[in-house]
Length: 328
Ligand code: FO1
Image (cartoon, rainbow, N blue to C red; front, side, top):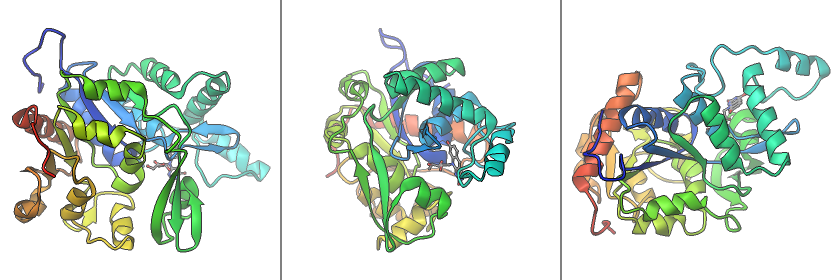
């Protein structure tokens, strides 16, 4: 356990920003090495969408299933031990089946939609679902307001899931719009945690910076609250060498005109970071980065990989301590 000497108020809290599959792997590692309840995972909700009359929150569900140990290990999204009767019956009706909803997964969407329609905030529903899975960590939507990522491609704007799933990330991207973000607010508990002098670390998980982290950072006041918070802000690079571990991060980075490397990741978060964790493959790049760097294996294949990376991140944060200044 990467515990800390307990302060008066119990284990010092850790805040992680996560979206998608890569981020949830490190979130699991953090949950397993920290004391129960010490971790709060802020989940991106820009991927949310209404489909078949259901409100679907993919990144909330990915981190929930992962922390509960019930996620589909092959895909990273959806449930393990799934059955597909619902999809089969939908297909027979000639309904849309491009977005695969397993029978167990469907229960979460149906219950979430029912409660949202009853006026219950997404964060309350998310907490109740986490409790039903016996998850000690807190999973917190980035906001209870409606924010939707739209992907601007050379063929025009696309709703996120149409780009990501239906078009399989094929169209070249030229930018992103986070509809609703300017009118939204970060969940107040995120801002409260960032002001908490006991906060041990903020971890930006190795998620896609553009579609998983930027929607969170786009919420009014959040970037400034992060830049001002006392706790060290540590990012783990989602790029190893010139590739992303999974998903369209590298493709997007290149299509946006950036070189695909850890320098681009550091530049993306410039002004926020107290430290960046990069893989041993990128050790030679350490001297070219404007922030303190820890070099360690960041590819998470096994559960112990997740725990070891989480331990390295927390140790890095503890060494940085309450930082006086962020490198500009
Ligand atoms: N991704 C796919 O590539 N194909 C799917 O059919 C699919 C279904 C799905 C259902 C529930 C869910 O929570 C996630 C699902 N995803 C699917 C993944 C999802 O599009 C992505 O995980 C996020 O939106 C981006 O990280």
